[in-house]
Image (cartoon, rainbow, N blue to C red; front, top):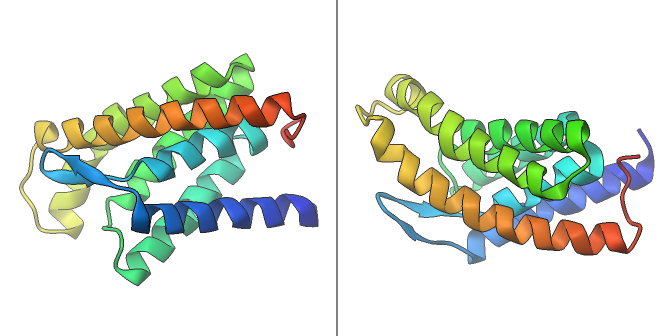
Amino acid sequence: MSTKKLVLMAMLVAIAVAGSAFVSFPAGVARAYPVQHAINVMAGVLFGPGPAVAIAFVTGLIRILTGTGSLLAFPGGMIGAALAGLFYLWSGRVWLAAAGEIIGTGVIASLVAVPYAAILMGTEAGFFYFMPAFLASSISGAVIGVVTSKKMKNAAFSLHN
């Protein structure tokens, strides 16, 4: 892995962590942090699924350790990042990377969050408890990610190829 790629990955982690501290809005029972989801789309487009998941994992870990995120940052961020990267890899279309983020986080991660939260967080919340907040966060972030990724692609900044 090149130094340039590692530096850009670290920069995306830093943006996601800092953005989560400053950009959020209420979304049902939780708060939405759209910067993480925008970074997931961007990382999927720039680097592919593996590095996008690594960026989401490190971001989630830092947010949990600094008290700016919950244990739900892992499934919410990593599943969306994986699907964003896979959908972009398969299609080459930024809007499908965003769809992967929304499906991965808004739908699949909200399903995974139910037993995950019960086991690790001691909550008895159901699927519909998590889904509205996960969807609000992932949709708003995916839109930002599409706009930003298209600007970067237009600037011939993609490291994915």
